[in-house]
Image: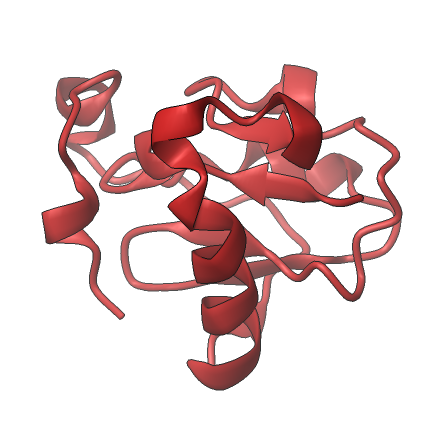
Length: 109
């Protein structure tokens, strides 16, 4: 099993989670982070660090977020998204986007 970044990260992109990851499995896109499933060791230390509550163990992912399992793997491998290991400031409007549904259409690949 692995951990998965879900839709609530889109447009928020808080990076608190990357500071605690022992294996540097996060990849950064323009407006979202994803977890590389081949690198994740399922330690779960990132879950409580996410201010957006956007990270789940794969088996705990809400049913309406299951597509993010494939999306995390795809974007971590084929998108050219680079590893992120240090916290960065969140976008200025991150709090405005927090917990808004239907953000998948806003994802910038």
